[in-house]
Length: 273
Image (cartoon, rainbow, N blue to C red; front, side):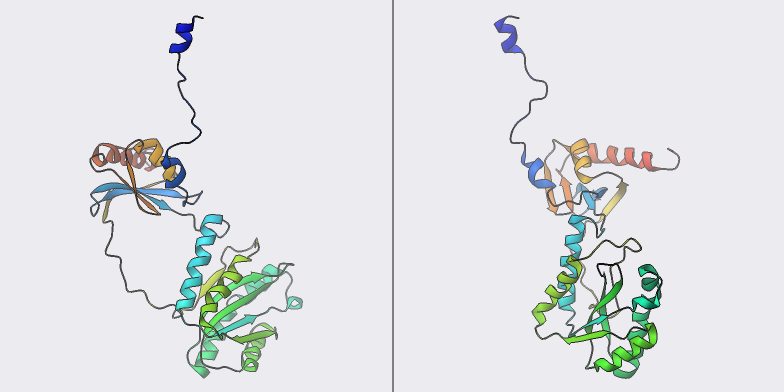
C-alpha cells in the first residue's frame, strides 16, 4: 500500500481518551434501573425526558436518596422519643411468622396509647438481627408515657416483654438516628417494606411547586433516560432542567420528540403486540 493511500485512510469510529461532557456529567445522578417518561412541557415549551427511579431499597442510588429523604422529614416532624419493640423468638416458628404476626400490632399499640395519653404519632423502621428475627424501631412524638405502660401493652399484644424507651435530647440528632437505622439494613427475603408511619406523623404538605412542567402527550418508555437521549435526541443540545429532567433544545421538539413519542406509544399499545 502506498504512503498516500495510508495517509488518506481514516478510522470510521475514532476513540478519544476524554469524551464529551454529556458522557460524564449528564447522567451521573441517575438510577441504573430507571425508566423514562417523555412529553411536551407547555411551561418550558420543549420536549422533556424525565427519569422515573426504581425506588428500591436494594438500589444503591435510590436507597441512599430514600435514607436522606426520610432522615430530614423525620427531623422536621419534631419527634421526642425513641422506642424499640422486640419480638419473642420462642413464640414463633420462624422470623417470617414473627413478622407477619407482629407487624400490625404496632398500629394497635398506638391506638391504645392514644386513648389514654392523647397524641402518639410514629415513624417505624423494620430491622432484623443477624439471625433474621425482626424488631421495630419507632421514632415517636408523644407526651410522657411510662416505659412500664408501653411494655405491658406490647406484651399483651405480642407476648414480648422487652421494650426500650429513650428521650431524644437533641433535636438535630433525629436525622442521624434515622440514617443509622436505615443505612444498616440487611436483606430480608420475606418483605421489601422497611418503613411505615402513622397518618399524622409528618406535617401535611400543602406547598405545590409553581414550576410545574404542564406536560401533554405523555409517554412512558421502558428505557433508561440516557438511552432515550443518546438514541433519539443527541447531538441536539440537552439542558438539565433538574436532576430528574432533561429538556431538548427549542426548535427540535416537534420534529424530533413527537415522532419518537408516537413510535414508542405504538410499540407499547396492545394493538401493536
